[in-house]
Image (tube, rainbow, N blue to C red; front, side):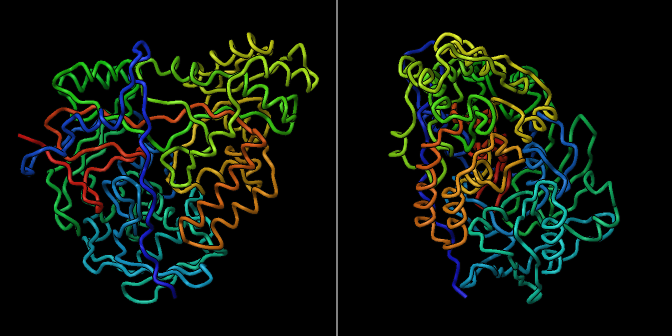
Length: 536
């Protein structure tokens, strides 16, 4: 067995962002975040108080194998724990319920040594007993077999090799396993509670985390109280009340009036309202989130690489991003992975088609469409502003008539995944490992899935993506393979990169120790050193 050292990732690159479209100057989002008092200032932490957190969407379930939205995981992470976690800046994997791990020579067996001082929260079907390796086996095998989102792909079994030791057996090598294990879908739970509650477990989750569920008023709020036998650093807070506020304007109003202490998912003009309020602070940072415009690689005019390149050259990406984000919160993107991913290589930006309408016209004519053509673009309601600006650019620059098809999420997902959308605008958010972007969105294994509904196929890319998770766990070596794959992907022009989105939150100045995360997770108490407190 080779000792698996904690992943040493590249330093995250925080991109410069436009705060106001009307302004000619640029403001660094990093400077914006550091200028606020988000817990990095002076003052001794104080215990007590209940934090009131605004959540922008209503959670349906907190069951690890059933959740589908990031907003659900934001609550789950306060209640349950994973074997490993990311550091605050997502630069490395750190211990949580597991203290150390080893990887076999063939990369198909991961051995984890577990903490022996972890206790579940008291529940209906157990009284707060100690967590053992059997609980890890039960939780992870449940995820591997039943997860709605396949969040533990490739794990065939979990072996209990000691009271506080487990071995994960993989079907094939996967260097991205540790990143997978940080997912909320792979949290450790008590078997008695799952079986006892049955279908209602999702509303009565019991974990090992810093807070436990006291009361859940559906569609209104979730009350959490401190877990007194939490294994990590004692939470400064007595509890957290999560208030469901789906309307973004109501969310900001609730923050300004003092009804909540933290407003999440702050966008649009509300960013400026919070910045101008002297009692509040806006934290906004580059995130692992991309928005892109997929072009059908299989059917219609865009099956031709020249047509795709012409469309890219006729797209003024900066105009789209600034038009949609008039109050900041995003920057134009260039590569199929976000800038905060450790696989990002700035030198590859030179391979991206540049805005050149005249060259675009020549390419389209060369491809056999001198007079343009008619097509459709599928979008969810939130993406209509992007599509509208793109529609105008295509008509003006290439005489391409783009009909905008605004559909609800289920229809969008079904249409795109089946390859029936000539064009579509989507977004993707995950972890720093390029695997979660490039494999999911460009590997032929994902044909028929939402990520690769565009129908991109390249055998050389497949081989590189497979090698990047099967040959080594060394990050530098894996990055090189991903960058080789990126070169081929960029040459094929399968889609248009639009923006890297920021993660943003508004807080009252009494909130200390809180920061936004590039993966949109919310940390109140975390083994990575986070422990939020309220200044009295």
